[in-house]
Amino acid sequence: MTPRNPLKIGISCYPSVGGSGVIATTLGIELAQRGHEVHFISYERPFRLPENAPRIHFHQVVINSYGLFKYPDYTLPLSVEMARVSCVHDLDIMHVHYAVPHATAAILARCMLPQDKQPKVVTTLHGTDTTLLGADPGYGPAIHHALTQSDAVTNVSSFLEAETQRVIGYKGAMQVIYNFFEPKQPLRTREDVRRELGVGDEVLILHSSNLRPMKRVDMLLETVSRIQPRDKVKLLILAGADFKPFSDDVSRLGLADSIIVRENVLDIEEYLQAADLSLYTSESESFCLSILEAMFFGCPSVATNVGGIPEVVENGVDGLLVPFGDVDGLAREVQRLVDDVDERKKLGAAALANARKRFSADAIIPQYEDLYWALLRKPPVAAGSAVVSCSDE
Ligand code: GMT
Image 1 (cartoon, protein in one colour):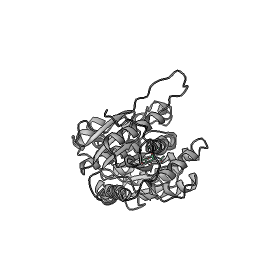
Image 2 (image 1 turned 90 degrees about the vertical axis):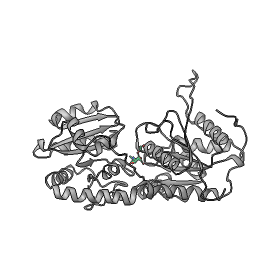
Image 3 (image 1 turned 180 degrees about the vertical axis):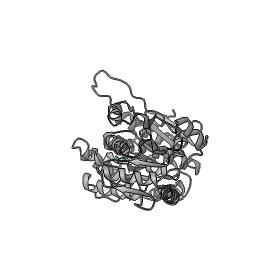
Image 4 (image 1 turned 135 degrees about the vertical axis):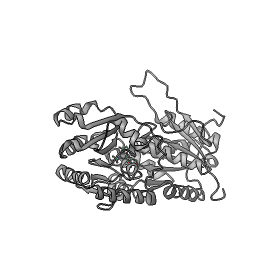
């Protein structure tokens, strides 16, 4: 393989709404645009993956149901499909996003292939695969094994890299490659979208997440409920999950008229452009892709100073960070940005500039390409077998 040739790359990820799947999908799209051939392997088509894009292929993992199994198994059929796709399409790289179960499946897939057909395995850790599952005795050793066997391991922040060493006890070489975003051009104007949302002169605060417990939606609502006067703001929640469980909190805090919820939005750019600032109250976050997405639309964030967030937001320069749990502090900083338009605009301009400079596709994709090309110069590591059929689809 001559270095810097176009590559054949397999990508496996969770296909549903969620940062790791979004990054994996966007990475594949960007790699294909740069001339590489990309094969996605998952149980469903990733939701942001375009149909009929050049050099992008999707291979669905078929999971049969067997009465004997109380719990259906995904890891084994995934590994067989990874091996089959690798063999048929001669993959150079198998890049898996979120260790469980993708990294283990990739290692197993590699063992099913003869040495000259084995792709290099790259595992990207995204967050709870380290911080939550890595600490679970039922998963930790399997994750440790998969990392040890991977040809390269990357983390989406320095915080996560340190956590991978601490929580999983993995001491091998790793690399930090930050997340990135490449916004699409919105189809509607900011004014049109605000009209759709029923927002006039109010300051529009954006929160976009899967609403999992660690996002601390309770604190998000509590923070917004303290803004004075209340009718000066609206909170737009782009929810990757059902928002109904929070209805009681909304009523208790008297927020019914202040909240707009949109569930499972695909065209997020339409809404990002409509926002004035974003608000994140998470107790843990390896990166917080949603903050970055808002930064690309000149939106400063008020966020908790946890995990990898301070690697994305420069406190006082392109956003404001507050210790986790300090709802008074969060409300104070949001109030400041609501009242002080100039400050909000200044932070927003810096957010846009820093996002473009540090976290654009052009800044990040070459780091993955360099990693892939470097790996291909190394000899195969695993003894292999030839148990998978290389016949076509
Ligand atoms: O780890 C998770 O909770 C899920 C994961 C996801 O798929 O959304 O989120 C993680 O990966 C994102 C993309 O790299 C990061 O932006 C999130 O901060 C991270 N979540 C956590 O660390 C809790």
